[in-house]
Image 1 (cartoon, rainbow over the protein chains, first blue to last red):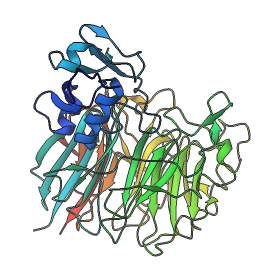
Image 2: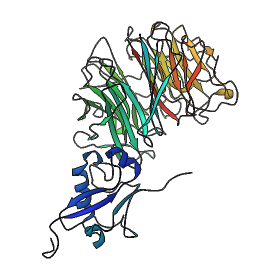
Image 3: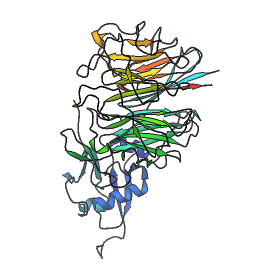
Image 4: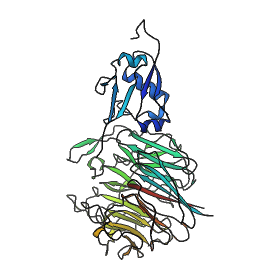
Length: 108
Length: 371
C-alpha cells in the first residue's frame, strides 16, 4: 500500500552487470520509475518495461524467480533471498542508494 | 568479386571474418556480444546480409541477435522459447523423470528460401521455428511428442537438439539430431516425426541397436544428393543412402572413429571431412596431431590432411558445429578449435593455414559464400 505521506513515484537507480548494460545499451546505471511500495518485483518489473531486452535475463521468464547465478545487493545487504514483494531499504526507494544486480562470482 | 564470410561463435563472443575470393587476407570484426557464449551464428541462404546468432549465458539466459547488414550491426529479437502444452518429462542422468526445461539455443538453421523463417534447436531438446525474423518462436511439438520422448536422456553436454538439416529438394523434409536420442526425420514440415536410427550400434547404451538413445554428434548432406546423409556418431562414422531409413558404418581406416564435426565438399558429394578425436575421455586428437581426414569415396577410405596443421603437442578439440565449407570454385574448408584457432584450406583440404588464432574456445564455424 502506498504511504499516504510518501511520494507517488520513486526514481530507483539499478546497477547492472556489464553484460546486461551492454545488452541494454546502457552507459551507466538504469533509473526506473516505480510506484511504491518499492520492492524487488516492482523494480524489476519497471526495469523490464523500460528495457524489454532485459526480460528473462535477471529472472526466469516463466517462473519470475531470480536466476540461480544472479544476486541482489543494496545498502551493504545481500537481498537475494528476500521475498520479491518485501519493500527494499528506504535509501533505495529514496534514490540515494542503488539496487545492485550482480552476476555471481565464478572463475578458475 | 566473390568472397567469403566466416561466422565464428566462441565461449566469449562472436567474430566475423571476411575475405575476397582469393581468401588470403581476412578482415576480422569482434568480439560481438563480448562475455557471452555464442553457440551458433548462421546466415540466411536467401539473404546473405541476414544473420542470426544464439547468445547465451549461464548467468543471464538466452538472447537471439539478428543482423540485417552482414554482421556490422545487431539487434536482439525474441528470446521466449516456451514448450507447447504441458512439457512433460524426459529421463534424467539417473534414469528418473525430469521435466523439460529450456536451457539454450544450440543451433540456428535459416530457411533456404525465406530470410524471416528459421529453425532453432534447443536444450532441453526441441525444435522451434520463427516466421517473423526471430521476433517470436513457436515449438514444433510433434518432435517431443514422438512416442519415445519420455525415454530420451541427456548426453554429457546436456539433452540438446544440435543439428538441423534441411532437404533442398523438399521443403517439408528435415532431419534433426539429438544427444543422446538420435536422428529424427519429418516429411510433413515438422508435424510428425520418425526415428531414423536403424543400423546405428552404440555400445554405451543397454540395447546397442535400440530405436532411440544414440549419441549422434553431427549430420551432413550434399545439396544435390539429399537422400545421402553422413553422420559422426559418438563412436563411428556412418552413412545412409536412403534418407535415413538405414545406416551403415564407413569409419574404415580412420585412426579413431570418435569425433564431432563432419561435412561434405561443396562440389563433390562423395568427398567427406571429419576430424578424428581420440575418445570420449580424451577430447583431443590422436597422438597430439591435428588431422582432418578426407574421404573421396563417400567414406570407408580416408586420407589425412595435415599440411599446415600442428603435428605435435596439439590437444585441442573440434566441436560438432565448428566445421564448414564454402562454395567457391575451389572448395574452401574451415574449422575452429577449442584452442581458439580457425583453420582454412583454399584447396579442398590439401593445405591449411590459421586465418585467426587465439580467440576464445570456438563453438561454431559457418561460412557464407558471397557472390
